[in-house]
View 1: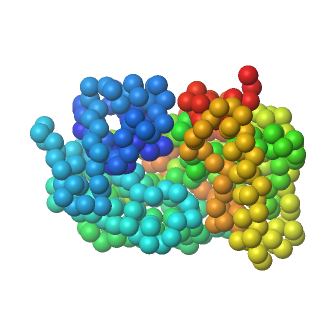
View 2: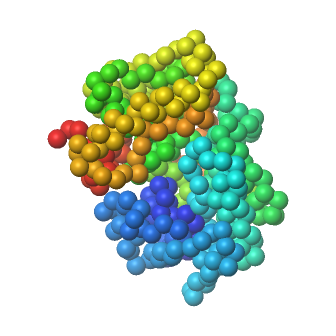
Length: 364
C-alpha cells in the first residue's frame, strides 16, 4: 500500500484528501504537514475522525525552511511513494512578494527535497487560472496568460519545478474547487446571497449570466489525485473540471432556490463603466456586504468565522474560466462523480459550516 506525504494538508483540499484516502483504505501511511494545527483548522467531526486514524500522522512544519522540510520528509519507516504539494497562500489579492515567499519559494524548496530523495512521484497543485481568459475552451495545451496574481505565481512554480529536473512531476490545474470546507471558491457568493436575504434586496453581479466560472467538486479532486498517484504519467499536466459548464447564471439559480432571493446582473455596458474605476467599485461592493454579514453573524451568536463575502478586485473583471477537464477521463479512465453543481451539493457545503456554527443557520 502507498505511503503518501501531503504538504499543506489541513487546508480545504488537503483535509478532504486525507479523509478520502482513509475512507477508501488507500494507504499504509499518510503524513500531513502544515503550519496550521488541525485543532484550529475548522474541521468537521468526519474530518477530525479521519485525522485521528492510526495511519495518519500530523506534523507542524515550516515549509519555507529547508531544515524543517528535511525533517518533514524524514520517516523511520522509509521513503514516500508520492508527495502531494498543496502548500502555499491560496488567498486572492496578495502582493507579488507574499506569493513569492509563501507559494513560489515553498514549492521550490519542497521539490528540491523530493529530488534529493528521489521520490517516485510528485504532484504539484496549480490553478486553471493560468490559461488565457477567453471564450475558447482551454485544454492542457491552451494559451497561457494568467489573470490573477495567484495564478501568475502558480505558473512560475510550474516552470521552476520543471527546471529542477523533476522527471516525476505531475501538475494539476483545477477550475474553481467547491464543496465542504470551501472558503475562497464559491463560498463568497453563497455568503453574499445570505447577506441579500437579510437585506431583502435583489442580488446583482457585474457582467452577464453567461460569464463562465467553471467548477469541480472537491470530492472529485480527491478521487482524481488518488488516480494520479496510481496511474498518472510523470511529466504530464491534468486539468480538473466538471461537466456543469458553470456560469454566473447557473450559480445564481441555485442561490435563488436555497435563499429565496432574486438575482440578476448589471450587464456589460454598466459593468464596463464600472471597470474604469474598479478599485472604488470593489471597495463599495465589499463595504455594502461586510457590515450586514457581521450583523447577521452576531444575530446568530457567531463571534468569529473564517467566512467572508469579500470579493477581491481581481475576480470582478470579465474573465471567463472555461476549462476542458476530459484528458484525465480519456487517458486514465477517470469519472467525475459530481458532474453537475446542484442545490444539494451547495447545501452540503453550507451545512459543513452551520454545524461548526461558522455560518448562520437561516433555516431553523
